[in-house]
Image (cartoon, rainbow, N blue to C red; front, top):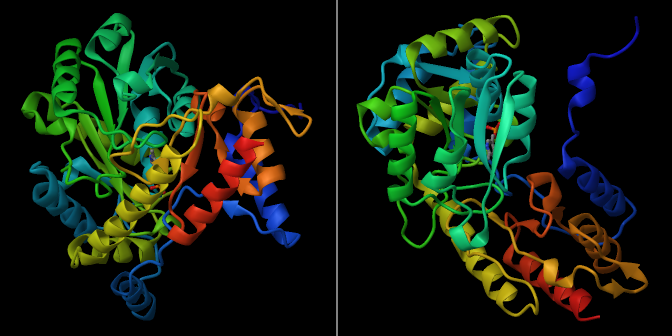
Length: 396
Ligand SMILES: *Cc1c(COP(=O)(O)O)cnc(C)c1O
């Protein structure tokens, strides 16, 4: 039997990959494409972090480690949660995985059974839906709109909670919308979860990238009852520009962390020993570089928002965090421009790429076909040139 598993056949390939491949192919042909497609910071990893990795290599720290992470890194993570979030954990409540994506994957694998339901908002990060399916659970998607700041309301959540509910995933600051949940909403969600006794997976990977003077507040901060059922997910990828190093982590209910540990011990084993030392340096060293990058992102956020204000028929919510803007282009749908009829986000992204040489990600992969996602993890100069091109393309 040379057939493939139903699982592998049922997974939708990442929608961002097709367009990214096309952008790369155009760039290889020498075409000047301005790329708003990146899902990662454009900065180099700070030197003090690289130094720690080089030292690890030179000292021979290149072997297997404990599958769930080295004790020093777990201690540093415990310290980070205390310092930044006011949350107290024991090292046994912490696991280090190969990126926060792997962390969320392992959480779902360790808590879900067939028939369980996992709630999250649309627009969603593309991997949530597939990871829930890979865990044999059912995604329950709550549609959110710009008028509700792309945040699930307590009424929406209450209307889908049942005895099948296993978990809710919250992404704040959000990829792709850049919105941040209001603390009052988080408090209401916490009350629903505590009452219904289901897990909360709080994806806080963009915690350090907040604008307009906002400070981060995670759902686990609303008392012991909610902290006891919440997985606080974080990692070094976005805050320290370390996407390639593959270190993510979570703190949560000890029994579930042990389950994750068992799964990890038979799949990936430990995250890379060298990267763990780098992550240790990142979390325990000076946090100055993080703030420098945050300021650069805020300046870019301001610039891109200002340029979107000039675009006819495009509306957006000013991102309060992360490095994406998620404007609604649907007023231009139905138009025929340069002989091309634009019927949705895929068509709009293809038009902008082929005619305007601007690479953006269509919103349909995020469950929001009216929108396009633009990353502003690029230079101010590129932002301005790219928006000049988009403006011209829409005015045709
Ligand atoms: C980038 C990202 C992650 C995970 O990143 P890793 O590189 O796997 O640590 C998790 N959630 C969201 C919403 C992201 O955008």
